Amino acid sequence: MQQETMFGHPKGLFVLFFTEMWERFSFYGMRAILVLYLTALTTDEINPGLGWTSTEALALYGWYGMFVYFMGIFGGAIADKWLGQKKAVIVGGVLIILGQFALTIHNMTMFYAGLVLLVCGVGLLKPNISTMVGGLYPKGDGRRDAGFTLFYIGINIGALAAPLLVGYFGEQVNWHLGFSLAGFGMIVGQIVFVFGGKHLKDVGNLLKHSETEAHLATQPLTKIEKDRVIVLLLSFLIVIVFWAAYEQAGGLMSLYARDSVDRMVWGFEVPTSWFQSLHAFYVVLIGVTVAGLWLKWGNMGKESSAIFKMAVGMIIMSISFLALMGALYDASINVLGKAPIYWLLFSYLLHVIAELSISPVALSFITKLAPTKYASLMMGAYFAIVGIGNKAAGLLGEAAQKAGEMAIFAIIAIACLLVGILLFFLVKKLKALTHGAEEITMV
Ligand code: PHE
Image (cartoon, rainbow, N blue to C red; front, side, top):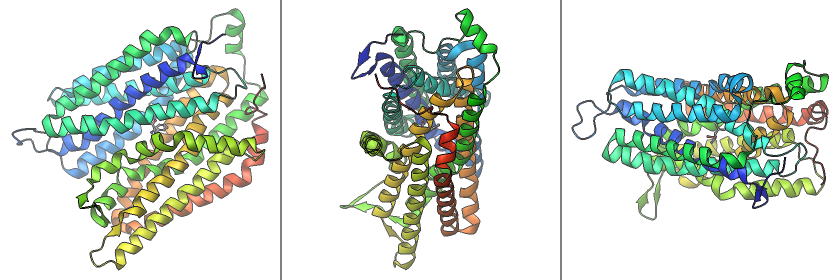
């Protein structure tokens, strides 16, 4: 199928880029004010919330974070079986819009209904739009990884802007205005997707158009396909550790930034909440550079398979937690009990270098390895793993309240290191099992 291109990529990539940018704006905007809204007093005259305790609010936040991604497995399966990815994205977008607007109504039934709609909507939209990025590139097309990097940057532009805008209006003016803004963001995303649909050609349509395809859809998996699924499932298991470590940012690292870091910079105290946008900021800043470095590395003839990049990512993640331990030590010997801010800035930077070596790489890898008829399901399974990682992150945060931050950071550093080393040893074996899925065809 002939695709029109823009900046060397199929035009459809930019449709998916902007749709997902707005979906993430909506997602992260809502997430930025959820706990604040839950814990704001009901008696607050200007901007009343729901009056929950912090423990209750954090527990709901943890479950929401898990289900919203876990649902991806169903979202993927539904797309493979009934809807196709394109329709799944549209239905998901509508559910998200309804969910955000349900939250604008100050009533408990509407609140829970809103959360359920969001969980179902994101579950349908997010994995399927990611699979569609892969669908834009034919097998062996060397631009696929770069396409995913661009897509990932779009995600993070949305994630960067959301806490600033939705957070500001939600917190300073009215929570419900914040949720409406998040809803409007998704409306813009939906418009982009529907009107840009022509550039997607038949990417994301249900696989059952021709008789040959219908025949393929009922065939059992071949040995090669099965091997590839095994590699994917193994890499997913490993990726749980990464997300459990990465998502410390919203919990433990945020408390740590508030209590144990000297946030004064040139006489200005950096607000703790700004750290929520730091990951996204770094991704936008260095996304292209990190992807470019990997490309250069590969072009030099060095090992640069997805599994290898993931192994390196895990080890970098481990170092980032060593940096945090350094900060804890610094704080312990400081009279005010505070560590300098650069430890935290450095640690977040390492997080993002690791993220860029793992997350967009994994998305691209899935679209290369998954058998076509299970393409969305495999992507959904990956999102389910991210959901479990999110929940595990929360549990680690809770454990730190008893065991202390130093112990938990050390455990995370060791776990990431061990996983990284294990992956290094498995690179050759796993690569063989992919049966050349990563090979690029020269055109
Ligand atoms: N920042 C990423 C995003 O919102 C985090 C993520 C990666 C979430 C992979 C789910 C799956 O897309």
